[in-house]
Amino acid sequence: MNTKQISWTLVALAAAAAAGWATWANTHRDGTPPGLIRANGRLEVERIEIAAKYPGRIVELPVKEGDLVKAGDLIARQDSTELAAQKAAVAASMERAQQAIGRAHAETQVRQVQARLAQMELDHTVKLRKDTLVSGAEVERREAQRDGENAGVSVAKAAIGEATAAKAEAQAQIKRLDVAISDMSLLAPVNGRIEYRVVEPGSVIPSGGRVATLLDTSNVYMTVFLPTSIAGKLKVGDEARLVLDAASQFVIPARVSFVAAEAQFTPKYVETATERDKLVYRVKLQVPTEVASQYAQYVKAGLTGNGYVRQDSQAAWPKTFDIKLPQL
Image (tube, rainbow, N blue to C red):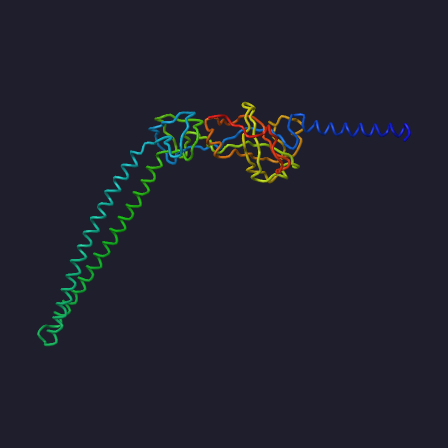
């Protein structure tokens, strides 16, 4: 090989080395270990708006902002005096309907006895008529009496039906009022922490009026944005890791819970200008429910940090990404 060929070979090797260095530096200049992809994001916590179903005055509000609550704990109670009065009035109506049912049953029994007696008298009169002991007019009078008693039985039975329907309607109204009275007590649907208390005792709120915001501390995740080359390989359930800026000494376990079906431009809050020019996919990295619940007092929405996923889901995590959580 002559000197010129050697020179060109060295130039080619130098160019290849430079290109390799540029690629490696571009991928790992942020300190991300080989085989991992880093994306910045913010910790998010599912918010639940605690709102009133019915308009009314707040008479009790035992929670404060920052309080941890359990599912079923009282958040607020509205004045239910008017509903209780309505229930008492309906209960009285139901009692009257029950009494009407009793009277209608008694009337029916009396009418049935009278109808049987009228039939017996008619039968006897028909026999007497055969012996010409009574006139035809007497037979007709007895038939009319029998028909009248039978009609009375029908009327009494109809009264039973009307009273029974009135009782059923009153029972339905009482059930509806019981539900409404129960709904006046606003309860926590899940374990969580009160983020905001937006009203005070004595406030009058409309239907749908917000009382408080509850953070579901068991539903914690970080949203990150990943390029097509990475997002296309991810599956729901793949392992991930989270490292928060405020507590970088800890490594939080997570799993991919969502990968967007369509690409989008990177949101403005992503720091790197070159990343904002790319189409990316929104990915949610979900903290396991048991971990999030165990560390509920540490959960704070909006904490910034980094999410990490593996380029090869079968590869082992580097030792520096072993799970490390605070001691309780």
